[in-house]
Amino acid sequence: MADAQNEAVVRRTFDAFNTGDTSDAEELIAPDAVAHDPAQPEEAHGPEGFKQTIELYRGAFSDLEFTIDEMFSDGELVCTRWSTAATHDGDLMGISATGNQITGSGISIDRVVDGKVAESWVQWDNMGLLQQIGALEGAAAAAG
Image 1 (cartoon, rainbow, N blue to C red):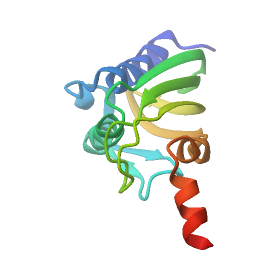
Image 2 (cartoon, helix red, strand yellow):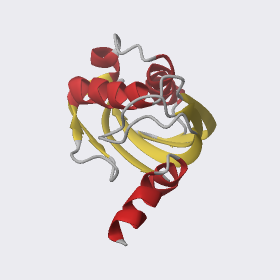
Image 3 (cartoon, rainbow, N blue to C red):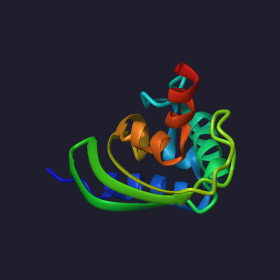
């Protein structure tokens, strides 16, 4: 059965990405939470990992804007289909700002326990992002 309260918690995590305001991290993210994102070098843990992930992406895309295209839930699990747009105006894991406009999409599944995100899984088009900021062309040229 759908859970509006769990969906509201997840919506607030997207709001944090959109604003860069991480002041509610401890209220939204469980202390032992784990975020699984294959684009990240390591899993993010707890509120601090959530803050660091937001800082990473907002540092590279200062106008980052997520749109929730669809959200549904069943008990503890909240599934969100989302899209995003931004300008690559800062460093992203060693890739200098290009000024390129990017768009992307993905799906996140969050497990919400006692009003906090306890675990997250995200799948998104990170290859498309790298292509849009020109990172793949540089790699292809270096490979010869």
